[in-house]
Length: 411
Ligand code: SF4
Image 1 (cartoon, rainbow, N blue to C red):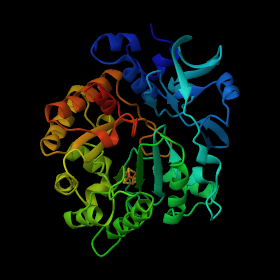
Image 2 (image 1 turned 135 degrees about the horizontal axis):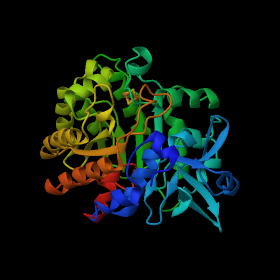
Image 3 (image 1 turned 120 degrees about the horizontal axis):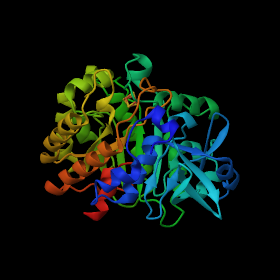
């Protein structure tokens, strides 16, 4: 039976019904997908129980939100707050625990991400460390640059992407530099690493910068400098790290590998279909192109090695109207066939769950069904098994934002 709100917003079968159709799929991963897909609404009881000393929070529009959630088995859920009319799960606090509630029923116990110790500290230049390097449960995140050439210089950003708007607001609120300074980042990481056993990887990303002698040289040089600074904190030549950047050419990839201790390379293609890519990611299509992006990913395997190169897709965005696939089966078949082409060549594909977000051009649209995401996650993980590919640098411990790589722990 559908509730009236859900019926208005999305006409679809209940969670248990969908999960029952996939008996081999872990229920908690299905729940993670559904919570990401529908978002969350923190109730008054949850807000009252949040403890800024223990929980990791972020501030948006003057409200302190829990950064995100953990499930009983340690599964990370990166869920965005959504208004009531979008039919989100509710997060309540009852009998001494946080719970996910849907249609008045408690679905699962959840925990809020624990606050890292370094969050209270400041850099020597006076910046709050939590605004320079943020944390996931087991990963350090560096959003190095708020500027994306495609979005800001050409109004040609990816249509699902709220990041430029989001980071512009962060920079304005906290008076952060447009690009983080390497010495500030290094100080934060040095402090974060004092917390024993918590962090397993360092993730660096930012918007695309096309400037340079060859296009993207300026972006690359900035990351090289940043990685060199971070590398000084480690005694080994390579350190656990993932750079999520624009797709570089072979010469640029070689520089990255030779001049830094970077462990893995990722360049998100976002949509695994040339025609949809051209429509959804016009900036990437114009400056690099779909086929060249794929070629560069394969080149990266030659440089960084099999199992150390990946690409991300925004799962579900290929169904966005009016030019996306109209059938979920067609979308799945097209996506998995392209992902298999990459897997054969040593590139692993992970997906996020597309959530139409404020600040993005696709903000008013709806994500596809839970069933679609379950089949996509199973399909991508199945390709890794089939082609003997690992995803250690981007799995449930390191990233936690990919339902398909959550499944890798069962591999
Ligand atoms: S997803 Fe697209 S628009 Fe967003 S920051 Fe990356 S390249 Fe720019």
